[in-house]
Figure 1 (cartoon, rainbow, N blue to C red):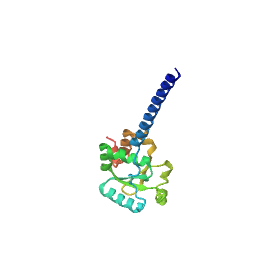
Figure 2 (figure 1 turned 180 degrees about the horizontal axis):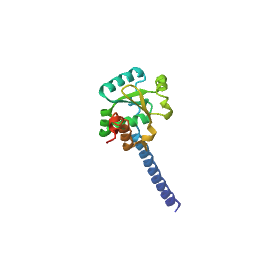
Figure 3 (figure 1 turned 90 degrees about the vertical axis):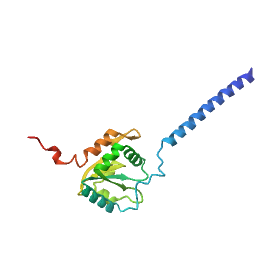
Figure 4 (figure 1 turned 30 degrees about the vertical axis):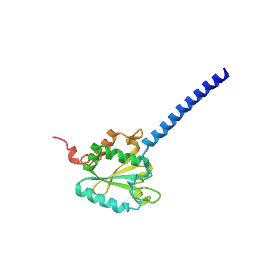
Length: 182
């Protein structure tokens, strides 16, 4: 009788261990599959002269009658990678951005914090990273946007992101859009 009970107990323990192992392997695999591969994310250029790059973006925006969209963050920033993936993989948002903005990714990292530019743009780092700036074709700061308000779960909210880009587009800020009818 004791031998049968031991066999039954060992089979039960083996089944429990097998279930536990399966759950553990599944959980780890899910985490790996769903996580962002930050080793391949190289959107930001710490060595770049951000001031000169922004000047070029402003000039281009002026010539094309667009605004400048600056995403401040770094290659270390998971939310920066998520935002870039989100806006570039959605065709409608990608088109909205390309039609209205010249995009620049300003680095913030231990290699280059771009402190003077952050000071010029009124310390947007207070909102965390990524943080977004909208400049007009004259280089004037129109808006600073905390990305936190655009987030949803572990991604971004399409409706909020589209609204942000539409609300700060050149057309939205064109006084001709708001003439009173007589």
